Image 1 (spheres, rainbow, N blue to C red):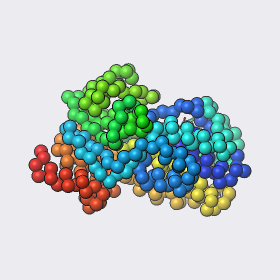
Image 2 (image 1 turned 135 degrees about the horizontal axis):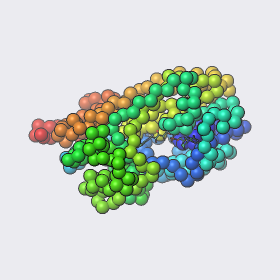
Image 3 (image 1 turned 120 degrees about the vertical axis):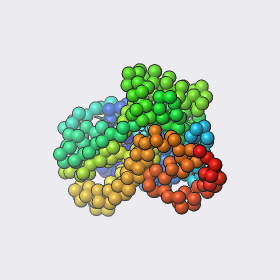
Image 4 (image 1 turned 180 degrees about the horizontal axis):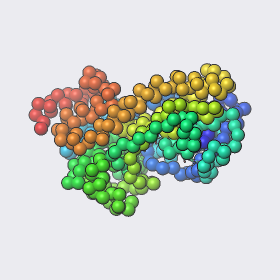
Length: 374
Ligand SMILES: Cc1cc2nc3c(=O)[nH]c(=O)nc-3n(C[C@H](O)[C@H](O)[C@H](O)COP(=O)(O)OP(=O)(O)OC[C@H]3O[C@@H](n4cnc5c(N)ncnc54)[C@H](O)[C@@H]3O)c2cc1C
């Protein structure tokens, strides 16, 4: 496995557990206790897949989850709970530590602090799984074979953490003189929350974030979200301002090389599905070998044929969601409940009827407020 993020580790675990005679090595440039980012979110559906694929690791993951039912949208200081969601959060590092421990238990070889610059650094093997994330070096090395397409969204975001503990996954929108901001924040452990700050390109330029140090950026964002942070600071972990890259590939495999996880495609973090997709890619590739046996080309073709339609659906929902955030400046003019109603339909997968069935408490509040809100 080239890359020991969620995708590479999970595939290594599934393959080795199923057949201990496999020799599987995971190579990663990070050390055993390092990673970027803070917590990640899973939907209930995502957890179901993990429970089925590997009950042992799922039981360990489940013990560490922070779970909540509602999400909350805050706009113009109005807090609007939206029922019927069912999400859980876990620290990204904790998730990786659990997967690393299970990999070690079953006999996967973990090579930490080892950076590869080319496929030739990996040595020879029957199968090379390219799981080195969004900026995949190996995907780019074999670009003519994979046909990657990478576009960047225009919004900017920084992935922070904080010791302020939030009850539930919350999207807090704040209008300032410089422009529009949103924070995606949720508790992912008994002591920490994720706090992702996002703004549009015009706001980013007007504030001058590009010329700020990390500490200056954090101080500025702490000011914007002072009512939400209750005096807690924002914490950095390689938290540079970035534009989200939309990655896709024309071909998912060639020869004995195959793409999984973010190296294959990304899904905007606003639908909380990147890690889920990465883990499900691993499950799909594992099942492809189960279905067709050890013939590598046949298994990789099966993986792409069965997995691509599912991925396409989710990435199109993620794109709908991302585009909604890209027009945040216009959306901010919408009054709170109409804003939240619009927000919930952003991915194109949820219409009014579905929202009425899934979120009756929210829809009752929406119906009451719609007539009067400006
Ligand atoms: C702000 C933000 C918030 C997010 N929130 C969520 C969320 O709430 N829920 C969710 O499901 N997903 C979320 N994601 C997405 C999630 O982080 C990714 O989709 C997921 O990590 C993809 O897993 P992966 O294993 O494919 O890649 P990665 O996690 O990126 O792992 C790749 C690994 O490869 C290693 N590597 C890379 N290059 C080399 C090299 N040259 N040599 C050696 N090793 C190398 C890296 O060290 C890394 O460990 C978020 C992403 C962002 C940016």
